[in-house]
Image 1 (cartoon, rainbow, N blue to C red):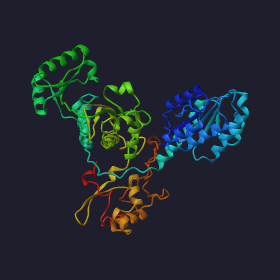
Image 2 (image 1 turned 180 degrees about the vertical axis):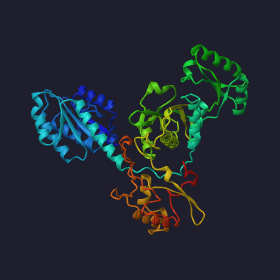
Image 3 (image 1 turned 135 degrees about the vertical axis):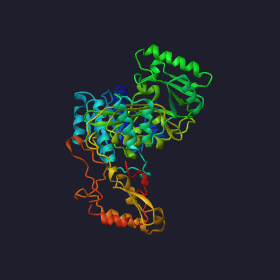
Image 4 (image 1 turned 180 degrees about the horizontal axis):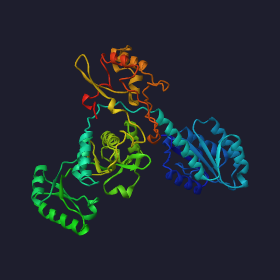
Length: 538
């Protein structure tokens, strides 16, 4: 995590400034353990605050600063500490500086100091600087320094992290999605109708609520009977983006109420949007997902960076709560997890007061599918899945809006800032034992498989044919970037496609190690090569 800050202070005002700035920068105040708070209680006056910030009070002697800082740094929930000092009647700035420097020299966590004041703390600051302790004049500057260090640690960790093992590749139907988009553009429309948006989502394996379009009341009744009551009625108009704003949504409609609800819906849309073209209504199943959370997952295209994927609170809360996290595609499993964890919805997805946790694995699958969609469909200008309801088991899109734009022909991934793994190089292979596998390039996700034996080998302290095959492949296909035939697997180098610099993925057909790979395929193969052969073509 590396962003949990402990604050030790002898005055409340500077601590408040530090806490406010930490919140602005997305840092977390460290939650001191009960053991640490009990130990602080033994060294602090009875009326001193033992939480975080730790108030050592205005009469704090150097030893009290020393002990409080040492206890905070020893807490496993603390990643760094900030020592605040304001000159008061009984303060000894120089002695406190010596105590802080002594602790910092032996600590394995960063320590920052902020000694506020002019000539009264000048000598103390000089002592800290001599001992190479970062010292600042304002609390906000000290917090910003810690935030910079935390960001660096986070980025370094991301460079070294390995995503989880790749699941069986999900089949996608890119051609079907492209036909839907082409049909809309040919008709002069840039905003897809809801059924068209759902068709695009379905092409990439994203589940959506059952729905049907109905131009007339009788068609709406027939559709509702097929879907099953109760249903949801929504106005169907290419000119109305936010249906609730025009009273264009009716929930929980049974068969007796459908006629009146249909009339009210059409009348309300006519009053609020008199110039909008009304094509009828959309009839949807009224899904009752217990403990479901409404989220937003979307794509927005930036002029310089191309498509970006967003995740945050959905439904009517998207504009109220904000806090949407953004990431550039393509997403692997680690990036998909990081995306929702960085948004403000993360605590909402955990178990809370009898509410079971949301199915975050299903959410990550949707994020990965949206990443594939953004990579393969360069015509996508905007995409909003709102709400995406994530329940204890599964995720389903209740509404979707897609905006497209005709673009001149270009290279397959020219619209992306980051080149994805080459799906076009995946080959379907039938082994001698009639087993169907998909042969693809190595990915970062495969690193765990390359560094560990299978469970049977670990138990028996031996090496089976599959583990031997994997070791042979790793030896045959170097991970070093010095070779021109190397498959670069270290978290897809983030280089701008605008400069023409792209990750170098070797073609399996021309790779010098092809013979070795073909021979290895005859072995009983572990994942990730047991991918579904049906996913071999995009």
